[in-house]
Image 1: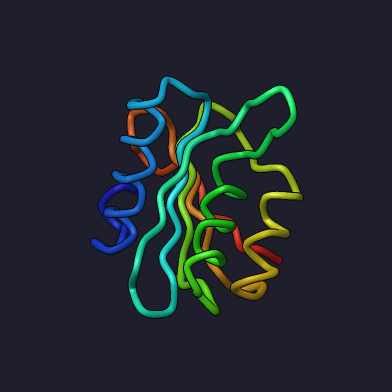
Image 2: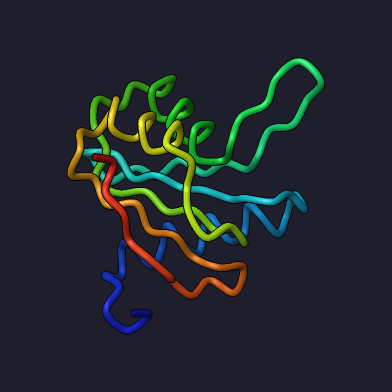
Length: 115
């Protein structure tokens, strides 16, 4: 699947991977909005606040004024994303937004949609 990934999607996978590695957390995520801007986040695990990397990236996009998403990527060891993560993408981008799931090595393993 790696060779078939669009260069812009490869970019958000790379950003997600670097966020995960830099912060030493279970997940890194990145989203691209309707203007091509990217938002990068890592897992938030505070005693009073727990957010997945993807939900954090979506929140950052919303807080920055994004009105839609084009794509999202998550780098994790998990085999699938929780429904709550996909719901956050769907809330901002609609059901057709591709969500790329990649392993810690950055190799894409699956593409889901937010539906």
